[in-house]
Length: 276
Length: 248
Image (cartoon, rainbow over all chains, first blue to last red; front, top):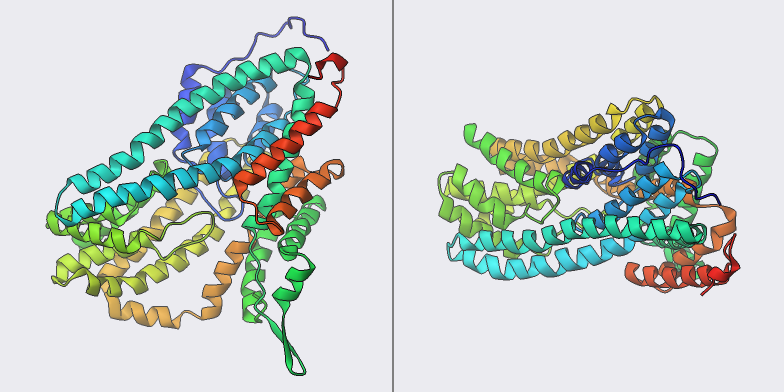
């Protein structure tokens, strides 16, 4: 591996670029949908980074946007941690010829599920409940302190985590990547990230795609629930088949929008005939 | 009419906090109540109603792709109608529920429909039209804004009896079908992600994650732990390409 100084000037994100990403992260849910969820919001948040790093190369810019248009879903409060790492990795990718760009999405995928779990339980599950416990009784007594305290308890810890988390993830990510590429371990780490990412993708199939068949078949006097039969074969078999079905269609270059509309019709038809 | 407009504006704007403001859990009755009270000319009542509705509805939050009965529409309307008619919140809440139900169906439909804008952005990026990201993003936002604004203003203007008739006339097949479609759509999103990360060489790792959830119901944080261990083991036992000594 050649680590000698290259001719090209090093591409660097400015503080302003990074701040722009942070301001845009608030809009992660701005175009939320059930299919790719926060993907458009993520691409929106990464736009300043892509423009800064690949502004001089339209093909690289296109690849950058495509990367961040992929499926993304996390808790908004913990997403800055992932965005910070994405920024650091994009910077590395822009400067190093042999950086594996697909590792950017592997890392995103590996982190989004677990961080969503942590964010949801910390903010939805814990702080919000505390905030209601403190705020609602005060509001019922007619005190404006109720909503104010509710607001502060929800906003302050979350904001601290977002801004410090982003800074930490970007700077830590940068330092880590620089060291890893120098010692030649980046390649192995990339593969390790890919593995972790795939484990999370597999888990997402079983936890996010929900198919329960209510159909009950009668054989003579015995009733057999179809879902029960399927579960005894393998739980979440249908979500797995559906996901691989979609994957197969995509591999065959079937347009994503066609599959999308197909799935919506499938849902309604399946309910109409009693399959769902 | 102006009041109807203002109440809808308050509800939809507070809801926007969760879409554009970073989702600090502020689109809730305890925040909506007092502001609706303000535009209805009775801040204190709005405040008290907000607190009461918060306790009733605190269990209903949307996590992941499940869509709960619409809290934003329900609490904005229940508060506004209670102040307008001078009745208690229990009465207006039952009036607001059918509208919140319609709003819920709309929310699910929009959740599926908005995927169109991601595909629009895909096509624009394919054409190297970078503006596609912003246009797609803000079109989605506009739909989400309207999905709260319209039910609130219509609900306020036509009143509860008419709404009840409308709810009954929506075929159950369509209601349930849209919910089921929403449950199927993540399959496509995940499949698109797989196009980037999945290949046969690494297939077992995907099935490991799948199996851990399907058979053992391991939560996501547990998945991360197992994934990390597997990745670490792999990392330890695979020699570096240019330097064998890198092994710890």
